[in-house]
Image (cartoon, rainbow, N blue to C red):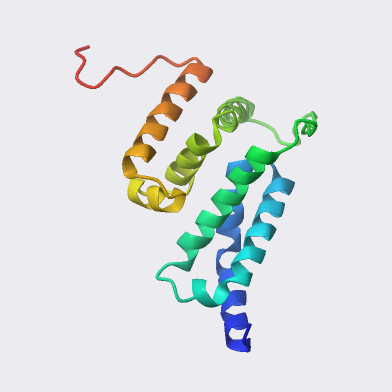
Amino acid sequence: MRPDEEERFADFVRAHSATLFRTAYLMTGDYQRAEDVLQDSLVRICQRWSRIDQMASPLAYARKVVVNRAASWWRTKSSRETPMQLHHDPAWGGHLDEVVEHQRVWQAVLALPPRQRAVMVLRYYEDLTEAQIAETLGVATGTVKSHSHAAHRRLLEVLGEPALPSEGATP
């Protein structure tokens, strides 16, 4: 890599690594795994930086790499790996009911299949449009819509919320 490309890559990492880490964390649900996914993604991006740097949106491409690496981890994780949960009393006061509800929702999101989770993360945490999500995941916009619909229904089911009325149904 030429020195000018190296500097642009370093600038890119400084500017976007926090955003890419957040995406990795939301996809994996685990801080250390997200660090690994981000590191692996940045290595892959660095290896192809001369081409990626010429793209209209290097960040969109990088986000796609992160999502794919996280999904790849999900598919290949060993059945022998069991994440350890640490249980301890919170060190903060108040708002405990909000924390409990947040954890309940977060666990439901983590239970979604990888593509549904990716759609939900990219839509509600990264605030991407359906078209941007479709481009990131390499699928059709209709596929994004169907994954989103299925994820919403699954979350309502898991969280014990009443189902939304079907479109065109009269209340």
